[in-house]
Length: 404
Image (cartoon, rainbow, N blue to C red; front, side):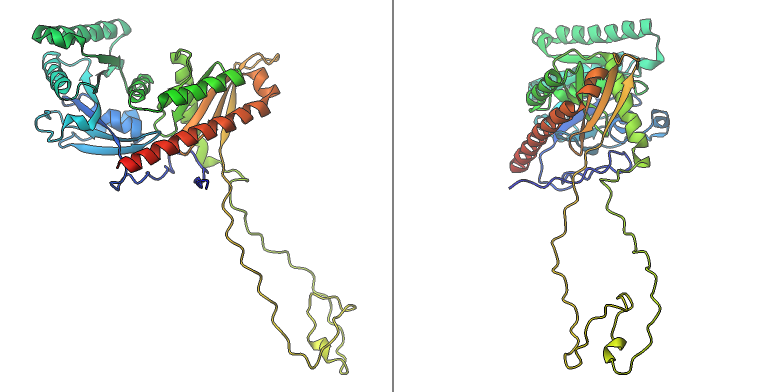
């Protein structure tokens, strides 16, 4: 029996989809530990990505004084633990085996002695208790420095951490650690967190295979599977990720989220009730005493075609129509497209958007000539891609429910 899917009437941030029983304890969530010193930018990262807070309003965020857990549902259910700056792994009171990823945030313009010492301590403890944990270092607030000083400070922090680990033990030299430059004022944060998220998605190879097949059959040069609300790409095809292309798709998705509530589809909206227009009332015919049925005739019937009277038969009320089961609202998957560098010859590129699930959307770059000449084929491929992704998401959800 096929599972009924919910309605996809909007992709707006103003109407977020309901959580998949996130408040109940019947689903296993992938936990991410967010650590760092005070004022390093941990809470601003979480708020900008998952609460859609404008970056300029992060100045008014209060200091984190206790561990705060934030849940977010995408292709996998997440639980982000935002920890205060004075938190240590000993005071966490939770085994590290419960976490899939540890993200340590360093302010790029901060004094490096204290954060590096604390980072090294976290890395060693995590490696001893949970060797398979993903270790990520976000060198944050990179927008405040010029390009030259930004790269120089980034390399200094990276080398200093590796030297400290090597000084403690040669064994720690082989610990895999990923360093990334981030900022909430550009797309570097979305790209860095997307790459971090990929390591926790078990179904990533299958999603990438679906994207590769779609690109091959639709002549697409690049395709992303984005989370609609956070604008993190959960998968992409085998071609390298070009930062300008990623930034373009990210901005286009943000624009659709911003202006989506202003529009409504006629096919997706419930039919509006229109009262019947009043028909002209015919002039009453003169009453005939010898015809008692004239008093029972309806004003909507024609005077010249009255029903014959049955004086001895009691008047029966009309039978009630059989109540039909309520019709399920048809599924609706919004789509959009925009032409990039249009030309009269049609040799430009078109950026397309198709909603796949309540959380995910497909953004792809197609040649304008292909999109305009074979749009039916492109839509046909999107339908099969959507069915494959929905099936993967259903299996992922069932597995996590059984495990929970």
